[in-house]
Image 1 (spheres, one colour):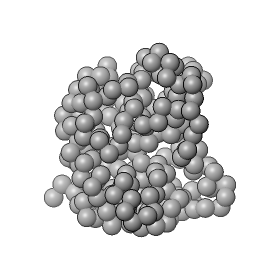
Image 2 (tube, helix red, strand yellow):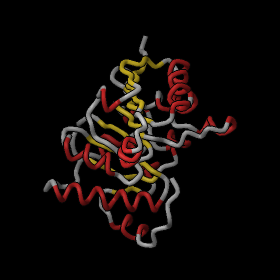
Image 3 (spheres, helix red, strand yellow):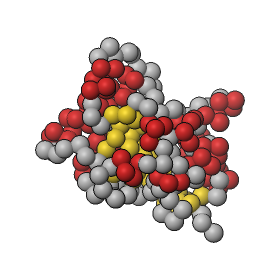
Image 4 (cartoon, one colour):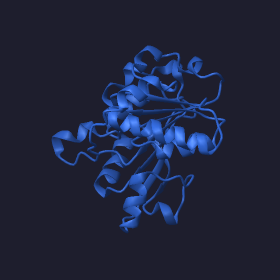
Length: 221
């Protein structure tokens, strides 16, 4: 998604107590970054933050990390997170917003971080052949995720409007030795997980486009 520069974003992010601009320093110590031992879930490409803010306020028993690499997007996400927590009369204690390039994700997470779930929502489909390796669901990326996902409980929740990306992601998951435990080609008529929607999801759904989704788990055998 292209987004205009937000002149205010840099300062607001620097002032936010739940934002980390250089998360590589937290590699291997994310558990101690939170003030409890709750499971950690990660959203890669959090966009404007509406999804993660609703999810995190609803599930205080889970620790969340929301990642994006675009400063303007992170600024919008920061504001939406603050608004959601304020509306729910909660303190932001179970969420960190971080600036991260997904292609260098192993600079930020290691096996010691023991992430239990990754959310990938409406990522860039990169339709051109030479760019497909940049997909967040590409086999190359999946192999990276396996380096820090919990070996027994680790799973990926994936949603998209793009048919080609979805079908090819299924193959990527098989190649990376993930097992697809749930799958649907019409999510809003067959809810396979909690109905918390992103901005893109609402837009595509209003256009009559069916949302594809799946849950994949690490095959530990």
